[in-house]
Image (cartoon, rainbow, N blue to C red; front, side):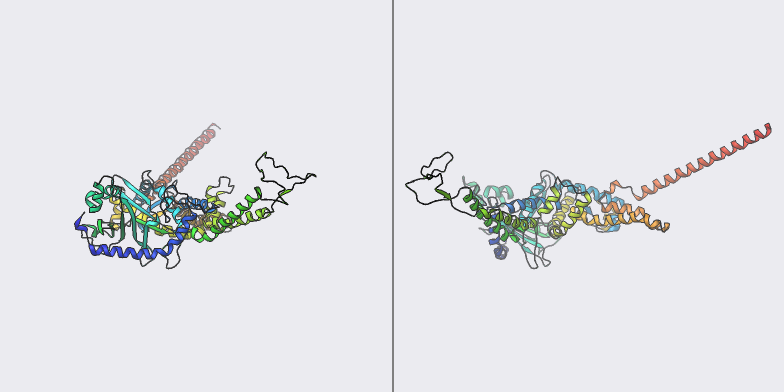
Length: 548
């Protein structure tokens, strides 16, 4: 145990603050318990079911489960499509971004950042899907972003059941308490034996007790004692404290230059700290559909295996209903059956099935299933333009969620990645112009929604250019209004064309000068040829005159 990092008063303050956050979160937990009952979860979750236990036993309909899986897939495809270079590093200064060397640096940095994030060992793809799955269930999801020299980046979605949050004055999450359990053996692997408390070391050294569990509180919050001149955790703007809750002893006190846990909410109302999810919003409908399905299943069971009715048993002691079975005495002398099926509700089954399908539609819409179909339908016969128009309409519904995700998840995550990449020399040195300006890069996302927003500007420009020939019929001078060079550069930026694919202004000027020289040489050669031909013709004319 490190005695130099112990602070009894601070430990008490951390525990009091944790109790406050637990009280703030308690109002949501009954709702999340109900979500866990409807959406099968792992061994963890809020219901804390044991591994191998039956989950989702109350479900008679799985529309919401399938819808949430598609919601997660669509969310990943919209925000972080793995097959596309969607990460764009840039500077806020437009004049700086107009410099060729800065543009090329940003392009190389963008490719490098994409490669760092999507390397197979980072686990980003798994974390992104789990993140959106949790947003669909609970409406709040934290992702831990870490990076170490020699190991690269790592991404891990934390289950909401072990996370407590608070927000800053602007309503953005800035404080995270993570309460979790680890065995003595796991804690030794994470912190080293010297950092462990006496009870942890005793358990580690006692045969058979190395797997005893201990509860740990990890506090990540703004550093109120931030001092750049210090050489310990106080020089970090974000503090990180690991507290053994039973012994009220710190295992580690450190910090971060950027927030390592990015927490996003799917949707919030004014004043809300935790987010609301499609599952929470549609829970009454989900419960109703399951009740209706239960009724229809019972009705169908009665329809295919009905109860039987007859006047009297006439000495019959049993009915044989199996295939090929014989039951004597159930037919009168005229051949009429003496046993009839009990009337049931089978006539209402078609209406009930139709009502269930109607009730499923709001669930699918809330989980963005229409957007998912647009992304995955292989039989769609729509043109690219038609697909973009439909997606633009759907994007109106998606944009509020995607915007909140960009602000609360992608922004902090990107700054964390960029900070770690620069500190670990994973990016090229800044160009001299950037160093002189004292600028710091930022990350933008070229996701589907951003492209749709720019597509409208691009299409407007192209429609204007297409209309010019019509106007030129009335006034030929209108063609001089168009700066074709500026449009070519602007369209390239709006369409996401890489700077390295375009020539610089100097290269364009050199090519234009070369082309003008070639044209001048061709004109001069043609003039010389015409002059030679004139001399030749004059000579022939003189010869003919002398001969005459």
